[in-house]
Length: 270
Image 1 (cartoon, rainbow, N blue to C red):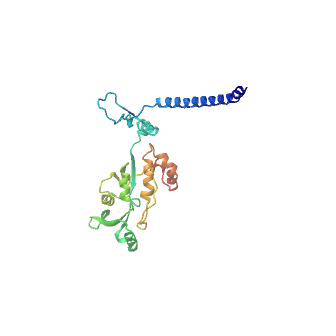
Image 2: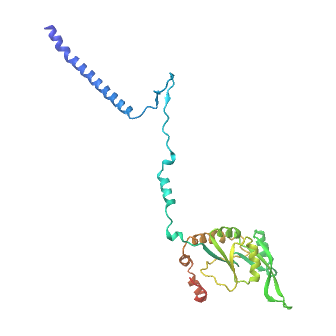
Image 3: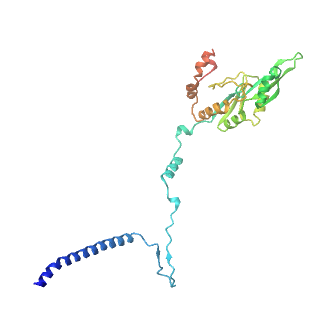
């Protein structure tokens, strides 16, 4: 009876111990199987060469595969390449080079007869750093002997003139217009355009079409910035248009201005 009692007391506990041990073994087996499966998916970085005839303890590492960086294209690169390779729309491919007709007096320069130029105005302009020069111009008037009259003129360049002409000539064809006579305008333009950036010079009585209004320049405005800050950006914008007339009309409404000034329609067109 004593043996039976002892067996009945300890058998259940032993069964529990074996079950716990079996569960732990099963658990470790599952973990080990997962590790083996995971390792099998990735090749080892190092292995001993099977064809090596030398017995050394140094491991021979297989080099990582070389990836050609040019074969990998990021979305941004593909997008940029697609834009660069895409054909230019027909309406943009045939935009002609802009032709700009520039007025001379009070737009690019201001000129005074030297004898009538007030000394105070001259000093104000020169002290402020305005570029200036003097010219001898042939007048349409005749002297008493019948010889052409010579006028002496003092000319002030508008601030930024040379920079304006240089930048503008990069994307536009330049034409000069002046209401003055050729005897006055030609030597003046020769001085301000030594590089011959104007392809054509128009003198009186040539007509401007599609004009852009500009604030008049005088020697009393030494800090004027109209050429570079106002007119040049507008002309760059116009150079990208197939037809400048709608843009100019929307901005300036020049036909209405001409009518208010009493200029007949035969003197302008849009």
